[in-house]
Image (cartoon, rainbow, N blue to C red; front, side, top):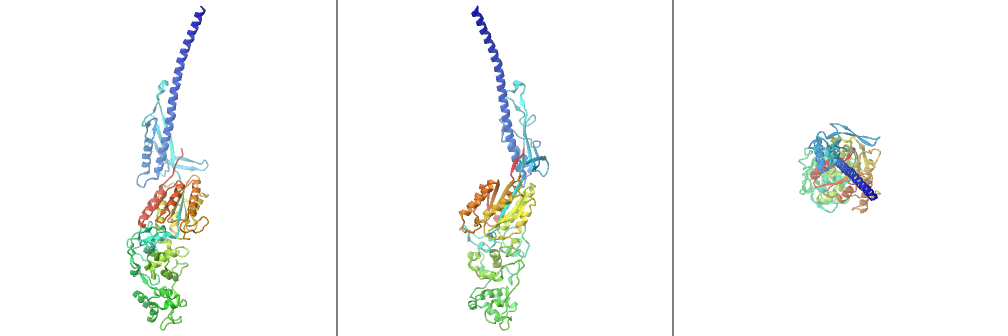
Length: 598
């Protein structure tokens, strides 16, 4: 009996356990199913948010436009494309490009250090994207794997993201060294050896346009380079210098020959001058036959008095008159055969000349150390409008010496000026709250324009500067320091992305202490890279632009990559690099950073 009762109790306990196991298995299965569906929902939500974030960023980047298509259509299209690149719960989901894409204005609140979004159909700088898996949307609600157990077969899900074109503080840092007018000078009209030792073919220089522009007006914006007969100055003339009013032969790359140019009077030292036009000119100015003989047939006279050649050459070309004291001639001199300093009456100077003299110009034409002479030594002793204009560009480029060269189309500087104007035009068209400032560098770096939303101030100031404006060597490191100082100044905005656009046509030759080092220097290069690293540490991105074959492209590329930027290069003839620079600076103007604000 006892054993029976014990067996019964064991059978009862076994029955209870079976019931409990059955009930708990159902609960555990249900909880497991719920965990699976909840996990699926969380995963799908994360996938959907990632998809809508990428779609918003891609759409915002297209708000800058491409100059051809509608920015809103570009943004809608790319938002849908990026949304479809991302799986949500194993399926690709697109957008309703009308209802799921909303444009507006993002404005910065300095108090909260956040951007707010307001829908707007114009002047927009932000886009809000909504992605849905709901009834009526592409893909419909998200199906539940085990939700039917609880009477839930599907779940609505949505996500939203807003991205904005971040406003930029842009410091434009431009090389104004003396070499920024080299492509206008005689040194580049025929094959020449560059600073890197590379032999390069001659190019179409625009020396005549620079002469014509001395009388104004300044070149069109943009200036279009070309052959002398094809540019905007083809029908214009520059100032008459002394009696020199005829330009002479056109400068054709490689084939131009100074020795056959009627626009250059050949007045050799210790030799007679045989230029018939010079004799005619002296006669028309009232010189006697005796005086003309002493001026033109003066091979022996140049030995007797050190400045005789300089003075008689100046008289021949009308930069001075001679008080010879010769019989029948102008009184005031001692009557001998020499054109002495005390007998010279120099003609007046143009209003834009400051420190140089006519004597400096005449001496330049006799030099064997000028860049023009190195290119073609037959230019020596040839006096005319070409050598005069070249004298200004090569030796008197500073504003303190010649204050008019800013209005001439000096190359490559003119191409750079026009490219900066093009960048400003792109930025202005975006209505993007960008600010721009201007720094320039040569031997020293100088602050020119504060960061400002009056964007035209920057190209206008640059148009008023000339190659070698203040000084003439190349201090790239100093330019970086100046650009960084402005971006980090009180005028820099905390919510703006810091951008530097650094342009140079050469190699740095000024060290950290302001000392000149010729031939390139690893120490100087390393200093430039160190300054770029400081920029990177302060979240400043540098985009570098090098121009011409003498630029240190490796250094400029390293400076850019150090900060996460990009290097661009332009070279070739002025016609070629002018177009390249326009494209580069337009690209930089439209390269807007984007960020999520929601």
